Length: 78
Image (cartoon, rainbow, N blue to C red; front, side):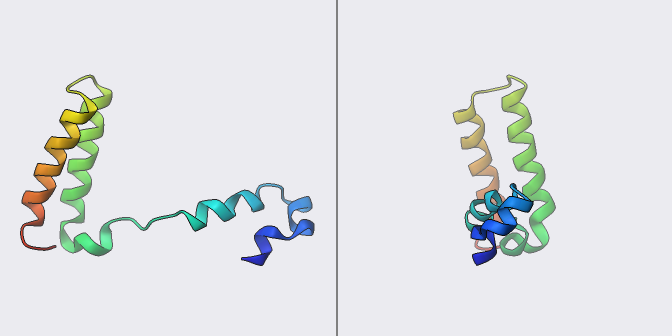
């Protein structure tokens, strides 16, 4: 972690210090908790975003539908 704050590194590669916040705030892809259903979960998420960006429903409507679909996929657990 100290390397992100190193002035010598920052002078040589100014972008490196910016990575610190990226890594500190990163979250893993949901493949670990969703296990074998990751592809299905990913497809549902992609469809919700695509629908919203295409003007097919509002963000709120598409998120509500996505939540229902993900709950159905999850069942009692991944």
